[in-house]
Image (cartoon, rainbow, N blue to C red; front, top):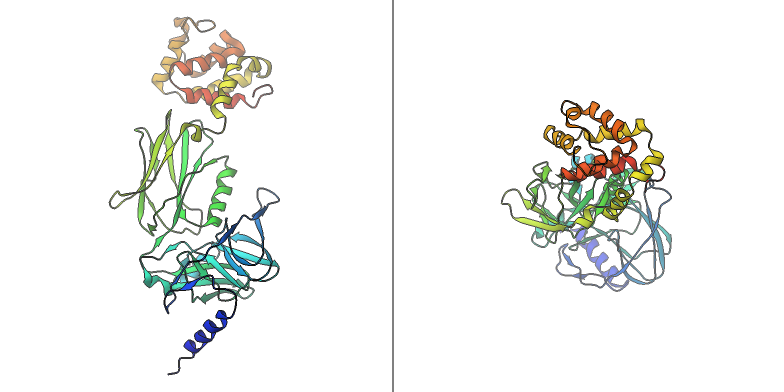
Length: 421
């Protein structure tokens, strides 16, 4: 019959049966395997010298079946083993993989054994295979060695992992063939930007901890803070378009929809802008084609403000005038006032001038002096009338015209001065 491949497979199966207790139970003679073992999850030690360095994760284990809680990497060993790993970027390899009709299907991980040896190693993947058995023979593993990229075929696939042909290491990652419908396991990442108004960045990406790490590094470098929420429980169709909505009338979301795909460069995201939410609200992700929701979550007020943000700003507001009197030079006060006032619309600017005549203001400015003043003249007029208390006066008026966001902007502008919290 000239089928030496089956002879080799039979020898491989019999030799593996003599090794450690099987971590997976063979369901059929094909490549389908059912994950039926108990895996002991281990938390890795994270080593990171500085913010710009890619973290290294260290793990040690005795004999048994184990899984890393960060990467999802699984291994089986008879004796003690120690190793380190890092996540690598797929960016340099995606074009080459696409040229041979493959795409990433799991994180790219560089593993280095420090002590002992593995008997079996399983790389995680994010492909949903339960309702698509034809995908099982489409998997491969990328092996990056000194000679370049090597694509290796696989013989064992579970619902979440692919077994390495040999536990020999260099950067490794799971691949899957391009050209047929795929469902993948996904994550939703939410970051709050550092702006006066509420702005969120909402990502929909494959379950790739390495990609998450890269997104977090970029967002944090911009001063953004993560809002942690549960991920979608169901798998989503690759290359489908999805829309994001919020149950707030004034929510602005761009772009209108996003295609779910693995992007070799920085992944796109939804930007959601809300001027003054002032309450909890719900986000909903739905398929564009039928508007069926696939994920929902509630964003609470204390989540979209930074920790202690409201209390801190209120504390600063309570004592605003004293530190400004001590620290802010007139020129700087003029610049701060003008910068914040420029955010007022024409009607709001009229209201601002009108409220400067109120009796609860330190010293009212006569209407005759306010009527024809432009923004630059008004700043000078306020400084002449209120001096360094001008910022405190502006704060009171912003509250009256319901522009609390400008109160926060004013506080942020003044927070760099000595004596300001």
